[in-house]
Length: 408
Image 1 (cartoon, rainbow, N blue to C red):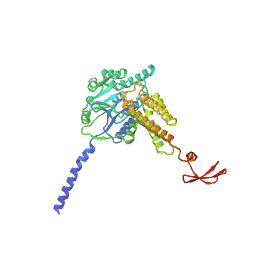
Image 2: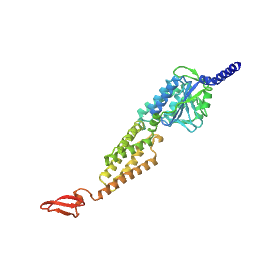
Image 3: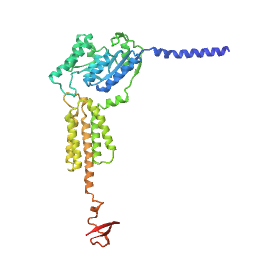
Image 4: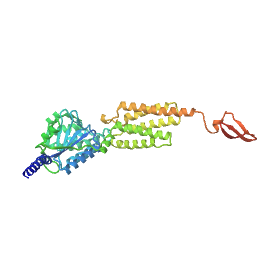
């Protein structure tokens, strides 16, 4: 009996010891980690807003936004800045990985964070505003946008000293960009961290002021919980890639024109409508040059005209040229950054491929026109038959195993 009691006590003691690490882990501070890699778009803003909500609901110590962006929409940037400044959980923007950057709108988002951190060999800056369609702003509008951005940056950098404020304004006025070491030297950022673990170590004991009030971060031994981007958010981010949008437009219009040229099915038309529907999201977000849309429309009109009124490929060749021009200027307005341009090799390859598709359709249509008629009265012209009843003036004639009514 004593042995059994001793055994149960040992077992209970072992269970209690095994539960201690779990309890300690539950008591450790929680840090939410987001990874935003790509242009500033509405989908990225939704990702950030969702992450902040999760952090607030779970009582997280902080939220880290690992950022690598060439910039993007000013409207979306303003929404993300508002989300960060109104968060009750401290938001730390960490420009990463090495070689990454926080350019244009990304620079403002980085400075707006409750703590701004960069990895070594990263870049921040080039925050001069451009129009919603990527165009250079008119003098009055440009002045308004720059003044608004300067005021925003001053409000975020006033606690960082005059050198940081001067650099922030230079980023807006002259599109200046600096490396992490330079940004840290003037106080524009708080730390340089080699990785997330190094970041957590440096943040421990750091004072921040989220909307819930001033607080000191306790991130030593924190549990890191990564919140991944959802499928829908990733899809919407993909649909803002100018190369993907161009491909969707090309495939969609081709499919619809194939459906029009040879009606009777629905698969090609359905695919075309789906592709154009997906492309419309990207067209609503990206800085579209409408001359590009016009040239694309002319190109596909020439393709369909060559099918309906064959010109032995002349209109198809002109359509390929118009397609190339349209694609090259589709998102290539002056001042639009290079990351929002359609790839030239993709444009040329897709245009030639599209031309070959329509040229093949054209050849099939021409060959079909040369095939002799095999049915109906026209197919009997020039053939011989056997008279089965006197034709006076009506009778019957047998031809090709069929009996026909004949008239003289």
